[in-house]
Amino acid sequence: MNLISKQKWQKNAVCEQLKKTPIVQIACEKVGLSRASYYRWRKTDKKFAEEADKSSCEGILLINDLAESKLISMIHDKNPTAIIFWLKNRHRDYAQKLEITAKHEDHKLTPEQRKMVKQALKLGALLPEPESEQNNSLT
Image (cartoon, rainbow, N blue to C red):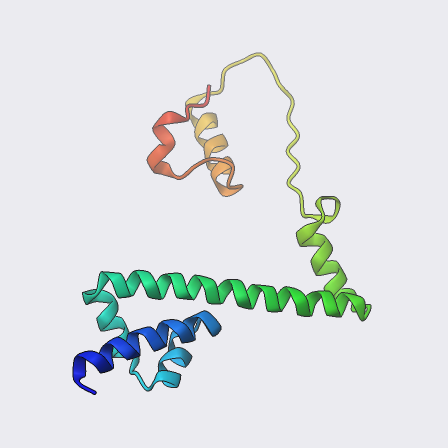
C-alpha cells in the first residue's frame, strides 16, 4: 500500500472510529495513527476536518443515547440520584428557576443604575454578549 492509499485508509478509519468513540486519542490508537498526524491533517485537509467533525458528532449522539439508556435503567432500579437528575433536567416543575421580583416606579434610572442593571442581567445571562449590546438599550 503506498503512502497516499495508507493516508486515505487511515483518514476513513479514524472517522469510523470517531463515530463509535468520539475521543481523538482512542480513535487514533485504534487506527495506529498519531494525534499529531490527525491534527496536521485537520489543518491541511478541510474535507477531512469536516468529515471528522461530522463523525465526532455522530459519536457524541451515540454516547448520549447510551448514557440516557443507562440513566433510565438506574431510574427503573429506583436509584434516587438518577431520579432527581432526570427530573431536574427533563421536567419543568423540578428545574432550577430564576425568580426576579421588582417594584416598578415611574422614574428613569440614572446612568449608574442603568449600568448596574445591565451588569446584573449579563451575570444572570439574560442579556446578549457585548457585541450586540448597542441594539439593547435600557431606559
